[in-house]
Image (cartoon, rainbow, N blue to C red):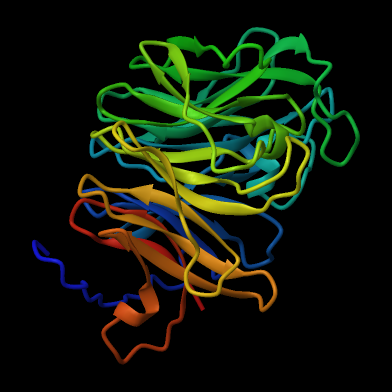
Length: 356
């Protein structure tokens, strides 16, 4: 809406997807394509799913699991995510994929690009085994992170979250065989890219190798322009500083710790970074203790969630006009659904997420 009135929303249940499990849609593009994952009914594996009127199983790369775990915005028919191969990892690494699957299981995991019904693996750097794809733009450039052959002393080698090899941010494409490494912020040894806009601006993280999942791996939130990293700052903490989405205006949203050093436990709050105002915290809703921002559209509307660690209550949120709204208060009744998490928003203001 063009005025300052709060929008109202109808809620549609996407159902149980192909498998009768627990679907989690995480992104929606301007065509209305919804991407995410769905647990198989046994809750022992998950598959990447695309909802285009009906849910479609995107399959895997030969292993048991796949997922789309970050918002996808391309309108060119391309979806990126992560999938396991049939090969076992010789080093027994858990890798970043394990946070979005049913725990470490020893398979090599690669990023994938899916288009026209075909899933194609996005390779690691020479000497590495694993890769991870998080976002893709309308030019066919996919971003993520990939291992190389360097045994990094800052990795945590202790099971069950073992990591041995260094990983670096990467752009695949526009031809899938092309790989461009994006450097970490010096002197950090490791980096990861999480999103790219149509101008080629890339956001992500750099830090220590650690477990290749958040924490000390995300000491610094970064913006790469022409391959050069810029530190976006933080909101008080020195871990978990994670940009998740960037629009074509260069506005970035994500979450970061509000206190603590690089070894601190996760204690997040949402942030928005703009070229003019730099990084600013988006405070949690009401008396909630924490929140996160997961996506932003070209109008600057931000979706995420807010929660209270003491009560265990979660709510899906919409931030616009410097106000954080509980999406449940904007829903046109009646509905039997309580919205817990909003993860994707397109330029029409359509939102996808999870509910109970």
